[in-house]
Amino acid sequence: DVVITKRQMLAEVWGFDDFDVNVVEVHISALRRKLEEFGPRIIHTVRSLGYVIRTGAVGGASVAADAADRSAMSGSIGF
Image (tube, rainbow, N blue to C red):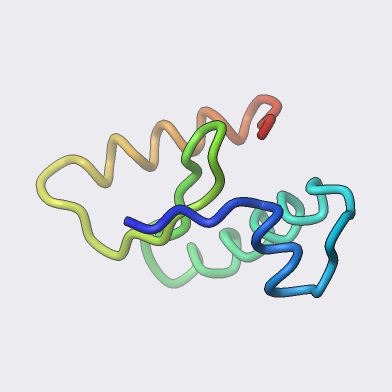
């Protein structure tokens, strides 16, 4: 899995070198909501690092990852 940091997203997606990383959180949250209308979560939070895309985990790993992601989303996510 390749982890992408919020700062990397700011630079690569929006071209910002220095900006509030909460912009990324807001857009990731909206993107997750839209994508989850069509299937399971594929954008996962890697705590203290950033985000990773996982399209299919073996066994119950995706369920555990989804639960951890949802738990993290209910509180403050600090990177």
